[in-house]
Amino acid sequence: MASLQPVRGTQDLLPDAQRRHRAVIDTARDLAARYGYQEIATPIFEFTDVFSRPIGETSDIVSKEMYTFTDRGGEEITLRPEYTAGIVRAIMSNGLTQSLPQKLFGAGPMFRYERPQKGRFRQFHQIDVELIGVAQPLGDVEIISLAANILDAFGILKRTVLELNTLGDTASRVAYRAALVEYYAGHRDGLSEDSLRRLEKNPLRILDSKDEGDKRINADAPLFEKYLTPEAQDFFGKVKSGLDTLGIAYQVNSRLVRGLDYYCHTAFEFVTTDLGAQGTVLAGGRYDGLMGVMGGPETPGVGWAAGIERLALLIDEPAPPPRPITLAPLGDKAEAIALGIAQSLRKAGFNIDLGFSGNLKRRMQRADKIKARAVVILGDNEIEKQIAAVRDLDTGEQVEVALGLLEERLKPFR
Ligand code: ATP
Ligand code: MG
Image (cartoon, rainbow, N blue to C red; front, side, top):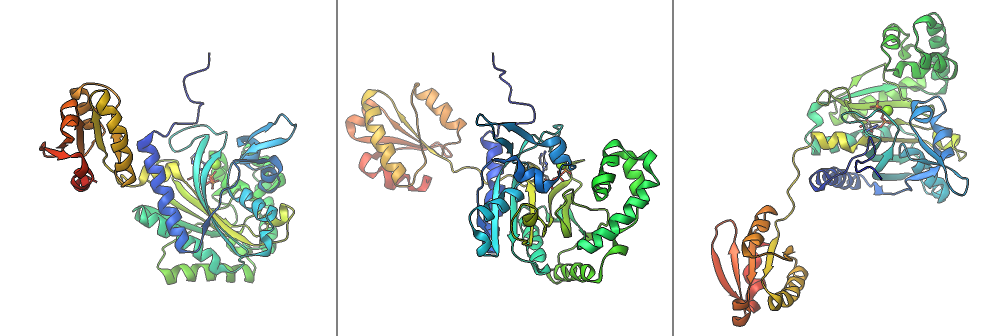
């Protein structure tokens, strides 16, 4: 017997919850369009390589969180854990490297095998913005400003802090990496097993560790600032002054690193204290190395993703759905006529909830429950006289309306 429960870490989005999700996506998509970002949709699953190559074997995502399987044809497949790699793959697959920059917006489900808790699921949803083919710091400023505008439209910008950091260019990272290796080598005894592995492959990731012992060691780790090349400093300076120009407040957090190998320069997160431990609502950064790592031409890119579930917890209640008009045909004859009436009213733009069964009392109860604005009652008597009884559910007032005038008389209830 199959279990009646959804799989752990997944959830049903019943209409009220789905309306909140939809509100997040629609607002974000509309604002993204104002910046010239067009919506893209890529497949929910890809060849495993698409993610494992660029994301890197030592990352949490690849080593522990991916839903990977071999399909019936023997292909190694992974349910996408994030959007960026799939979008970059799509740009290469479709020859769009010839028409850069690409400004793209996406929204959809992501899959990570994590320990479910508040704001953390195994199937969750993201909105995602990518600007590909722009190497200038103005690109970073643009996507951060789009993020801030979206959060502002949700009324939650004021409840978040923008944390900003730079991961520098390659030369900066090589120098910093050497300094980190030296520092952590002196603290091997205190490092978690994961971090000992990271020390071999990517010591920068230790800074991102959630292990308490690692965090204590991180407190005294060398700071990136000192190892930035003049070029990297200049880039970061331009991002900061762009944000200043726009009046977007930020806090530089030199511990903010991205877990992924291909990130460089700008890293940022919008963090709130309103969600407990799962406080990051939106995270992004520059990934100039990504397309090259994936086997394409070296192409700069910068982008971000935000968790829709976390945003949906924070936004105000979205507008309720439009109130329908209930059509209550009582009897066979009335039913046949009601079908046609429902059809023409819907064509005229009314939301019609056609009742299927029950006496008048039951139908009125249902109309109440679905918050109908009015009920159109069609009984044998009414049909005989070619009229309908129309009851305003807000005032309780009921009038008789000739069937030919129904559309006109229902207009106030639309
Ligand atoms: P965290 O540190 O919370 O695990 P992350 O660094 O893995 O986050 P990203 O890969 O940057 O997260 O994803 C961007 C955003 O997607 C996060 O800021 C968060 O809002 C959301 N997100 C990530 N993982 C989950 C999840 N398992 N459930 C719900 N939302 C998530
Ligand atoms: Mg994570």
